[in-house]
Amino acid sequence: MESIPVILDMDTGIDDALAILYALRSEKLHVLGITTCFGNGDIENTTRNTLAIVELAPQMVPVYQGASHPLASSWQSTAEAFHGPNGLGGSEILHPVQTAQSVGAVDFMRKSIIDHAHDIVLVATARLTNIASLFLAHQEVPSMLKRVVIMGGAAFVPGNVTAVAEANIWGDPEAAWVVFHSGVPITMVGLDVTMQVPISDCLLSSLNPEVPYYNIIQEAVDFYLSAYNPGSPPGKRTAPLHDPLAVAIAEDAQLCRTRSYPVDIELHGQLTRGMTVVDYRERATTIPNIDVAVSVERNRFLREFAQRLQFQRIC
Ligand code: RIB
Ligand code: CA
Image (tube, rainbow, N blue to C red; front, side):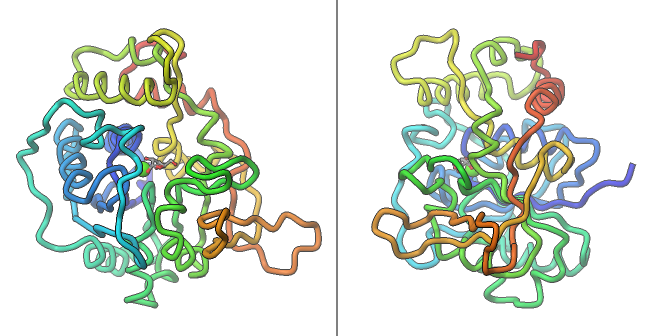
């Protein structure tokens, strides 16, 4: 089987952690490295969380620290309610043995993309700050990538930070604008599809207790389920597997159906900053630039997710 070389760009976070495990337990993806970005925590937290999760996976990959704040503003924490004070649900203090590489995220991405010209799929499950910085500094790079698969945006459904903006775009709209205008082939895995693939109490309770990530995933996902279901006792809670779905689609594009649309990023609106504006008019005047995931094979993804991470039920 031919492997797909990928770089994961993440703000590890609870669903990012599940996405890392999904990727590092894949037989098809060849993860060259993971770059980190602020988002679900500050950059020290998201980098430490990434290192800690990688140590619980079946293969070690290098981790490269990236941006600590958006391109055009300072960073304010907004994700604590969903990802906890340390980005992984809170109470367990993680002490990874490894440290991040001395090379930074942008330099690592550039070198890898040149070394594997036209082959790499970049999977972004965070603010697009690292990728925008790379494209701004090295304008030859977008045309050397195979594709960027982005967990971000909301095409035909509401946002999750504001009425119209999804967190990864809302958190650095200027960066998203750079990437969406770069000409690189993009698959946008937005809330349209990620809200359809839940993790649940039922699934969590079936995790194989022998896996090395059992404790951290139990604790973190329990926090995530509480956050998405305030006031509901454990039992029937569900929460979206945003980031694992983006990794899964990078590995197997047939998991979703896409439609090509002109998509732009709103930078100015008082109510709409960070919106992914999709021009779905029949006679749109701009050329389609983004493949937007519009439907997903929910059951097939959930089955693969459960089997790969060793949940013992599919529900
Ligand atoms: O909107 C969901 C996204 O925001 C996910 O990537 C989650 O991890 C957060 O970064
Ligand atoms: Ca994320």
